[in-house]
Length: 443
Image 1 (spheres, helix red, strand yellow):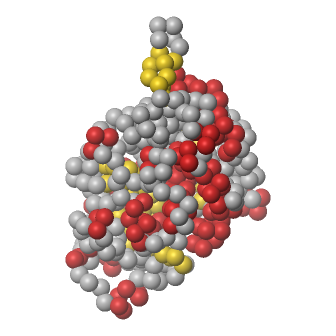
Image 2: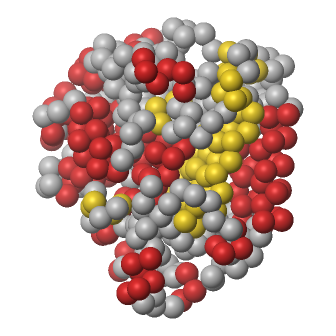
Image 3: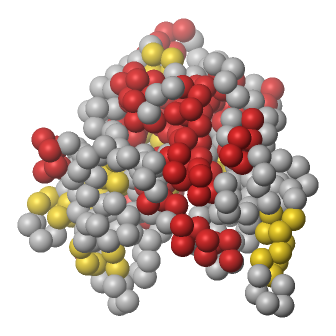
């Protein structure tokens, strides 16, 4: 597997970005970075300590040994080379099938950055602009109202939006939408009652949303939401293709993401990891397909979720992440322009919205939100050890990734345990062991 990973040059949008080592690589050095083989390299050759990386291995193995996770796959890459790729535990406890590097996972909200790239492709084609009102493309949203509270009789009080929600707000979870299952407001209850994510089609979902008020005035809060599912609908409308077909043609195919999509075909089902949840004691129990979310993924869905519907492998997602670290290019195939990647992965939130309130991984001082991904604007202020400009996200079944442009580093982790009692935050558990092993960050 070949790849192109190089440190990004400082652009006007990120004039303060620290460049690795502060040197100017020669043309020969840049050419070498355009080739990547998944064969592991000696960690010391990439600035890591083999001895210290054992702490990462011990951390992942501990979660498996303590039966918090069935199994895990991790990949650490730097300077266009794989430092290590590891597997732990099992992909199915009942059968004893071991975890393998090509195991397929439900990546849930790690779908969001991929949908973001699909939207940015359409942005480059001039199909939309951040300042546009969403209703320009979804006229069903032209008459949306805003929830203001409830009267003495418990009836919702509605008001007009101060301004129509914009595309910029849709891309940053600040447009006024919510998810339904993270909140307790009357608006959240309507989302639950309407079963938005179980709609028959994306158009059906839009029709339902058009009848539900916004949770808050656009631009005044950050609330994790169905915004990326709305974007999935927009991809279909603006491109004239289904979301799966558009992504296959413009992202999966060009990037060589051969095991990524919205369902797992019959010939690959033996590689599909079992999904687990935690009971009230935090002990693992296998998920039963058909209960709640569509966890069987046996056929192409009638409502492909741009916010959480994809399946992938660790190696496939590494290719996607490396494309972003490479300013939009992989193996000589360009997906996005460098300036577009910078726009997507830069913070677009005002400091007043980076409060640390609400969703556990929501914006806080030092941590903002780009277009469909979180981004560290000031890691030290956020009490994190990652490099400035690191962008990332995670999925509800404990899949996670981050891209660190400052250190020219990517980490991808995959496991299958749904958010709930005893759920380990493996992203947080893995970051410190990775960075304490990076002894030569300027290498």
